[in-house]
Length: 356
Image (cartoon, rainbow, N blue to C red; front, side):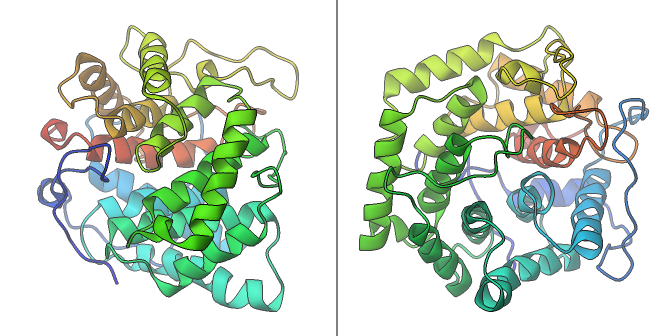
């Protein structure tokens, strides 16, 4: 199912990544993680020591372990862990048992759980369709039957206003408002291979997405960044001037150390009412912004990108993860999992910067 392919630099029309061979030269052989042998990678803590040097191998081990442990223990999908994993993991070469297990688990949602019990939420449909479409594009380059089914089901839960009923759990940036779900649906149809977007059902759904986005302003910079990302794969979401404004706004949020803080990309409130930490750079903020800027065509040698990659390579933790503090409350910090996925995606988009 998973193939090694050579991809070029990010462009507005394609999914950019440099050649997989660069990753292959860095990734050393390690004991593979699988569903039977996986152990929980441990809590996400701010006081975990930094790694002595950047290690892609450790990052991959953490991503594999976090996704498989979540699958094994909780038997569900979440935006911050195994969905994010399906975006990042195919950017590492090789036939991974962990990747295959998580992919098959997502396919079973579509073919078994949804047929027998139905989806847990409409959001699960959209998130699954997006993850599978992204994964298809980065692996085989072909739209699988299960992905097509998930995309088709996505349109059946689209509301009359073009939006989707999302999980409003006060767990930003992913599970807190409907606007995020619409941009994720836009990404799903935009990245789906084999010109899926040209089909009649997709065109009707996309018209609804565009209508929703015209009538509902993006509430945060993170949402505008999501739109910037989606606009590289789907026309008619935001104008060129709006894209340029978002790029400039993202640049303005870079810290002196080269990183970005997730909390500075929005105005979210913490559960206990305490202030957000907008001054400390973190894995999600830095990885997400660097990846989105690269998707938008900002060159890998742009100073903002090189400084961002420098921050990522010098702030990996010993376990291989990049810590990100929860925007909700100081407990599990599961956004660290998505932050690690975006860190890997950002580094993958800048192959000339990968060597330690």
